[in-house]
Length: 72
Image (cartoon, rainbow, N blue to C red; front, side, top):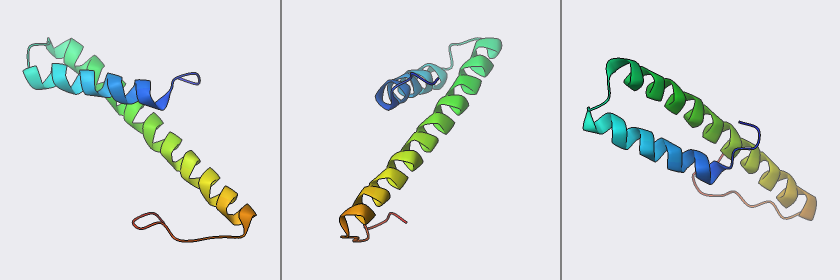
């Protein structure tokens, strides 16, 4: 997943949700998709956290730190 883009991961997550919501996949396939979805969700969470930390560093470097509403 190192070369996976955030947007591609979100798109795949949406596809997985659609497939699972239909309820037409076999149990084995559903479990495989669920596992993939969990991995993609974790990837997205880590990627967002990394971007947030980088943004804070960039703002700190400029000397102008202002809190972003809802972001800690």
